[in-house]
Length: 300
Image (cartoon, rainbow, N blue to C red; front, side):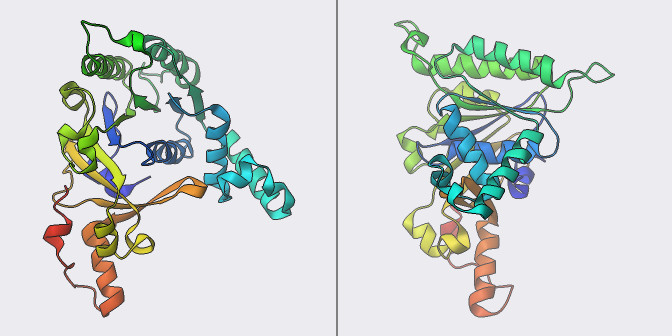
């Protein structure tokens, strides 16, 4: 659902691959996961979202808000029932969601091996094989790689090693069943300022085994000002850092705008494209080079 991002990582999500997005807490990783999952599911491709955090009711409220454009709080509190138009929009959104191939399972606290068993059963029951014995098109979204309990580590197994084992098992699962997976991981404190591979929490193995690694984060105040504010350049940025099959994004980032109250994230284009559009709007010509482009595109 994000053409610029798809192009940067090589045309989209690939079979037998794990594409990884890192984000700090509260940056909106679950929201971007839902937006991608919905985009794929509405193309009649089965999607399984495995969620380690959010409760089921909150998740469905977010999805209904996304489809109906009615704020999450209005749906969760039932305030929408005071408006006939909103009632109809929520009902339409509900029917649309029911008609898609969108599957959601909360896996909070479950061992990672059990999670893979859940995904395996889903593949065999909801997706299946084609006439050539190949798994049909589908997508697994894993939100997100983390330790599920203190029992996952001990004196002989550090946290980064446990995460390394998870990505190894997930990668092997995708290869075995010939399916794509989009997964997420928390960024460490370096992720506040750094936009490189070492900003990811966990292990080098996360980078070794993923097909692409991108960072999703808030824009700084300086970037917001330079990009024309949220209404022009958005309030988030997506930075493709590693891409085995695509060109990546040489210099810069992809401008994204998160509308939190309706759980939507829109792609606005690369920073260069957004600044060119701003120059055209402000100065009346299309070929203006963005101001301070080297400074603004140093993050990639």
